[in-house]
Image 1 (cartoon, rainbow, N blue to C red):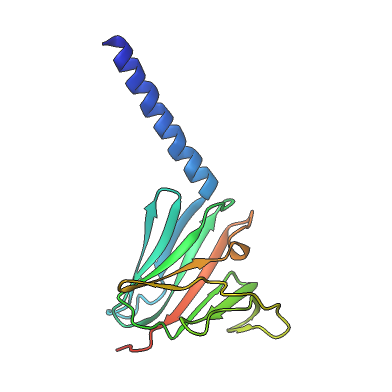
Image 2: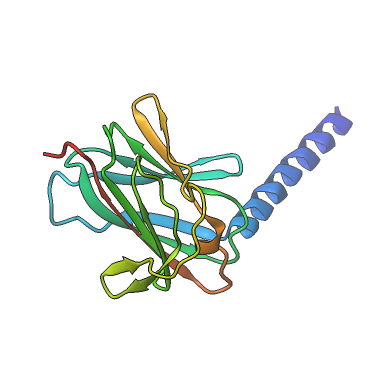
Length: 167
């Protein structure tokens, strides 16, 4: 009985250490809507599943913006899931220096430079499908490229979106 109790305690401490390591590896992360003035704003929340973290945006208006704060050295992937969106006419993400803008079709192919209010992709090197945007049932899912996530300083990502059929 005593060995079982010790084994249970060791397992619990090991699990807690794994959670601390996961938090340290991923850094701290939070997400919030920047459209609080609209009562019918799209809802923004974080969904954590194992090593994956997703910003989940649930459609109400179909147009909006959010910010994601990341403190620490981010090592894992970060996904954005648009729940109940029909086509996603536009999506933009910036870290204040670099930016990516795209849609379901055509795919995002450039990492541009953020110029006050827009993403300037002139002179940027072309890549293939940077956001890897895919339809998954009634959701649209994309992956934020590591170039916008790997920072030793606190990082703020700003997201903006427009669905094709918004109210």
